[in-house]
Image (cartoon, rainbow, N blue to C red; front, side):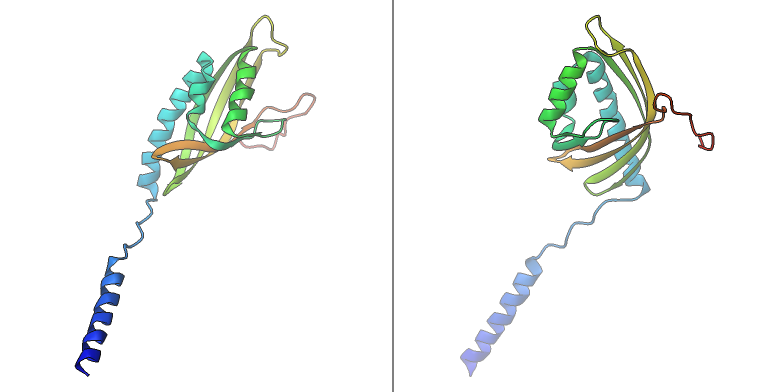
Amino acid sequence: MKNQFVRSIIAVLTIVFAASCEQPAPEVESGKAYSAQIQKIIEEKNEQIQGFYASGMIDSAATHFADDCIQFMPNMPAIVGVENYKAAWKQNIQFGKWEFDLNTQEVKASGDLATEYGKYTMTFTPNETSPLPPIKDKGNYMVLWEKLDGEWKVVWDAPVTELPLPNQVPDSTMVE
């Protein structure tokens, strides 16, 4: 009887000890203050990315993109994966200088994910061998960022031009 009582006590203590070892799930950071903190980080990264594009340093720009990133460029298929991103942009910079002005409007962040909404302008200045004409574009963009191995990286990048297609009349009901 005494052995059974001792075994019961040991069993209960083992269960209590095991349950007390469980760590509570960490609380996910979110809210306006956290989003503002992440927005500052994203704005700093955007400054670097803009400089890398302007300098033709695509490998350096790519360090800010996740391995499985997707870039949704207007009027063309999505660019999937960082290696395809690098290949596409290395081809683009052969034809001239690409300059971006990225202006973050808002970031909503929760945990290791953040969504950035911004406005952009883009200028392409062709070189003498370019098959492309000069381009000036402006629009909006959405970027999904994820904190991977301690660094915020672009996962999805979707610019949306505001300029009408050729021969398209702008919609006068649009709000600026």
